[in-house]
Image (cartoon, helix red, strand yellow):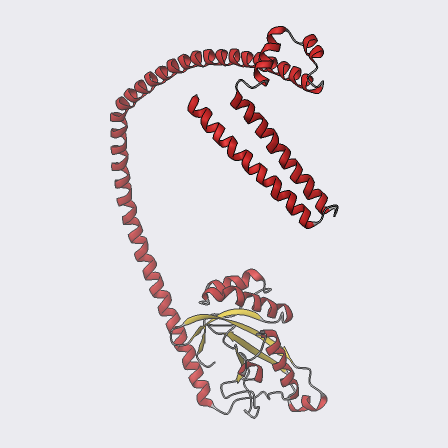
Length: 381
């Protein structure tokens, strides 16, 4: 079987996912184990007569998976005369690097002659699908095997004793060598297990002694640490009591501050109420167009005097400022009305620009005089 040596026969009983996983754990596929498992499960579902086993690949004795099974060909009457026993036992080896490397298919029965184009001298099958494995878009084991079976239904290999006796002897020698190697490996494994058991016993004794010493050291440290722990606990208790005293004092201060804030808010509320009443009186006075009778009925003499002082300007400069601000506001209103008239096309563009120039000239003069008066007032004050 090319460079493959059988490790053990196929597993007995029905083939399940657990048995396939058990065989794969002993193989050396590495990260490709899951892909190999998926392909093998699909193949076994469609071909339940195949079972898994393990073989050794190449000189490095890498462990790979192999599928053993039998396939019966549906031959016509003429081909049945040519190949009277159309059931063939086969093995499919999945090498390292599968599915990127093509599987290797072998016929395990002895063939009479090698006149078939697909079968080589060592009973290896090489169909077009296996030759051009990488060129296919979908790498599928079932597809390649089904195409091979279709080819054999039209060109079946003939069974019988093989002509090459030397090949038989070489196969038997290889089998005996593989058996010897497997026996030597078993012996080496047993020796290594014995050595490991002896080492484990000696390590157990040393570990027990180390454990006893560590326990003694820990107990001594605990005894010495009890006194230190008592000191630390006393210090913590004293600090907690001090913090509680400071917290109670701070609570008293906070209550006093809260009472002061409540008093101030009450005073501010009363002042706001007074101001609101004064504002209402002013608004009513303005609404009635400075009606003195209404003003005298609503307000007392003291409030009247205060309002008069607040409204009337105190000196000539303030009177001038009042008139300038009123004229400035009137100019802005006139400009806004002129803009509305221009949008409604009641005034032409030239007339609108002329009005804006005149009003802006007056507004500039008013602003300049206002600034001068404000500067004089600051100097006087």
